[in-house]
Image (cartoon, rainbow, N blue to C red; front, side, top):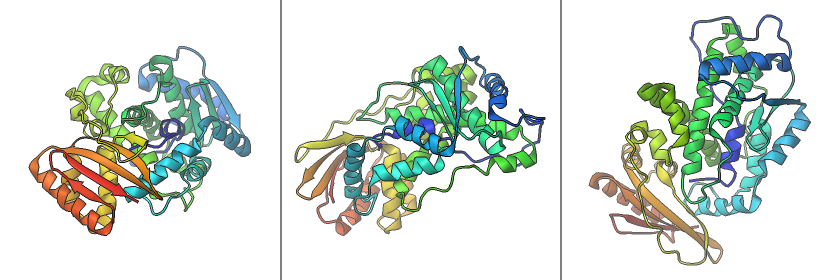
Length: 373
């Protein structure tokens, strides 16, 4: 499951929950640091110390007013409206959204409201909204400088993979590492500064942004930190550094780090035959399957227990989409590990089909699932 500009967006957004209940320590940058410009070298030293790598070159940091920042962000994100329109059709067919929302507009609104700073791996520049070194902005600078350090050592500007989960899985590694360093910085602050760090200058997401867009955008920040923790526990920083060279390629690997650490290869499933000219293709993945099951649970088509059994038993899939008159059809070939999970999936899809005309379910190993909407 993907969005056209997802990888770019996730390099830009810095969103995590401040840690609470940690012992207080003197705040890096405290004691007279009033501007972000003066805080940058403090943040660089903190990132180097806690990430265990040295910056190879100076990072260009630009501080912008709110309006200038929004303009720079919009130009950098380069939202592909036609691709977002296609994804809206796919999401509608799968029951992830009602109707066909303007995802490009929603994405632009989400970025404008919630992004405080971003590092652009193409220009090698960090842009920050504001100039005052408030705790709510300092931790974002630490987060984005971690991206700059990652980029200098491992390279973040990589060719996109449009028909699998590699981009989302890699972004989860990248963000998990940056959130880890960011949280270590927040934990080093005084109690008062930790409280202020939670008061970000970005507003709440606009009410008209579809929930699925919020879930896709937040996935790397939620799943990334425990994934990185598992990797570092298994082999310390050397193992984490190696992960950037040979990153995970599926959401199942980042959700279940043991699979990544065991070197389990991504499941190979053939694309199903489309019923028309293909307008989109890819992998739903364990995370995408979980999103589908979450909606099905809300409609009473599957129990929470069965939904968890199905999602964690994901064993590979491929989907294709095509237009059929005014509708879009999505056909998925889905393999699950174990007969119990497959039976639960078939029962759930049967209930989904009863509520969604134009849906068909065939086979069991793998399941061939077609939905039109």
